[in-house]
Amino acid sequence: MRPTKRGIAPALVIPAAIGLAFLVLPLVALVLRAPWGSIVQVVARPEVLQALLLSLGTASIATLICVLLGVPLATVLARSAEWPVLPRRLLRALITVPLVLPPVVGGVALLLLLGRRGIIGQFLYAWFHVSLPFTPAAVILAQVFVAMPFLVLAVEGALRASDRRYELAAATLGASRWHTFRRVTLPLVGPGVSAGALLCFTRSLGEFGATITFAGSFPGTTQTLPVTTYLELQHDPDAAIALSLVLLAVAVAVLVGLRDRWLPGVTG
Amino acid sequence: MKRVAILVAAVLVLAGCSAQPATTETPTPDPVALTVYAAASLTDSFADIATAFEKENPGVTVSFNFGGSSALATQIVAGSPGDVFAAASPATMKTVTDAALTASDPVVFVTNTLELVVPTGNPAGVTGLADLANPNLTIALCAAEVPCGAAAVTLLAQEGVTAAPDTLEQDVKAVLTKVELGEVDAALVYKTDVESAGDKVDGIEVPGAEKVVNQYPIAALSSSENPAVAQAFVDFVLGKSGQTILAKAGFGAPN
Image (cartoon, rainbow over all chains, first blue to last red; front, side, top):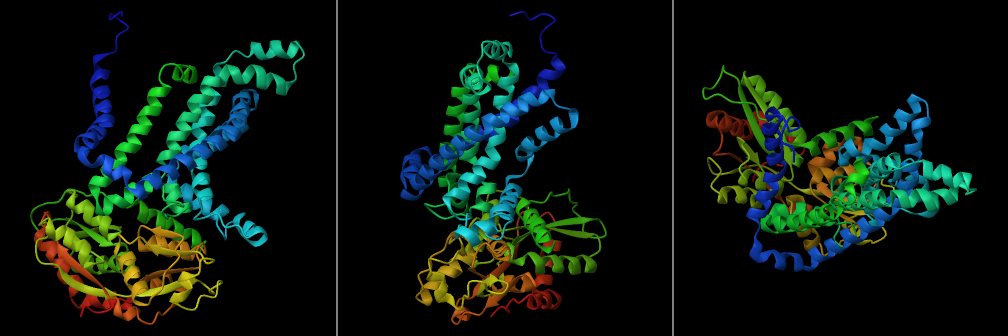
């Protein structure tokens, strides 16, 4: 501790405190208003358990897909530093768009691409009689769309922070590019991948807008926990608060798991 | 392009909540901002009513919060500021009257009935309510928690049809959008929604639907900072100009 010149300017402390309070107080209100007595009952309702299991299942598969596609994409993005400015910026922008896009817009976009009359969806329907909307697969696709950028940016950060000399050394020792990636690069950025996957999982678990737009809402098939929460809010607000707490608890558990060990590797 | 325009409109509706500018105590000519909470099925006709009302009352601007009636009732009970509530069912209005948040007793201003709706050209060849039981068709209904869903449950029970829906949407406009996009083969929406969608969908009259009448009550809210103007809006909706606009949109007269 060196509270001398390196301390934070007082002019920054007050807005920082207000900012933190703004982020934390709504959640405090949620916890204070929670119907603690009936939480177990609400969560044990069959339709809630069904929604929770559906959410956990779809979010797990979505995370797996994000890792399989996102790690290679992050590798390309990290290496794009050597590219000319324009394609490099374009690639980064394209990957970041789903992060800043309202999820409902993402859902509409998915419908226009993969819906029964969508650009690709119409052929899926005509040739294979596959219609994606209103299926659990649509829930997963919506989650992948909104969550993959989290993983890509986390892994890319880790890749950029990693020491490329190890890869060069492996190459001079005769390792193929694939072998180097598998045995040198991946272990180096392992923590980044784990962190990204966890962020990806929580974002998928909380997905609402794209899901309800692209996948609809039907108990057991597409009605995930956030959708159930929204529905409960309309006729049983206490149940909605209880469900919100469940989602909050999972999110906090994941973030606590992320702490220290992984996040510095990501941001550094 | 039309389809894109619908989507943009749908997104804007979903984005919902309008900002509420500060209001003053005195009525016209000082500017007054009125916030009206209205059921999603009233989206088009209430926009027209607002234009007519603003013309008759210079200085008044009407802004809307359209959505599923249950969600709107929840917002009002939770303390969201507003001046008027127009619900798609007496049950959702009752949530607000039970909390003693209306300035006067709610009055029914229109009625609405359900109709089958299919994408233009009826690609799945739907003929009647019984087709909703076909598991091979993609069917959308409103969730039973919102008025159009409650009406659908009543109608299906009355006609002895066990529907096989693929999605239970949060409000009637969400159902309509999915029909317009051709993502579902058939759905139950209000007659007025079929009218408002124009040639983007086809409506199929359902025998027995006339017996399941949804009543729409309206009331000024006690939280209004301009109770006189709020009541004036309610009276306007109940009056001749308001009723003409609503009848044109396909709503039935209160009975």
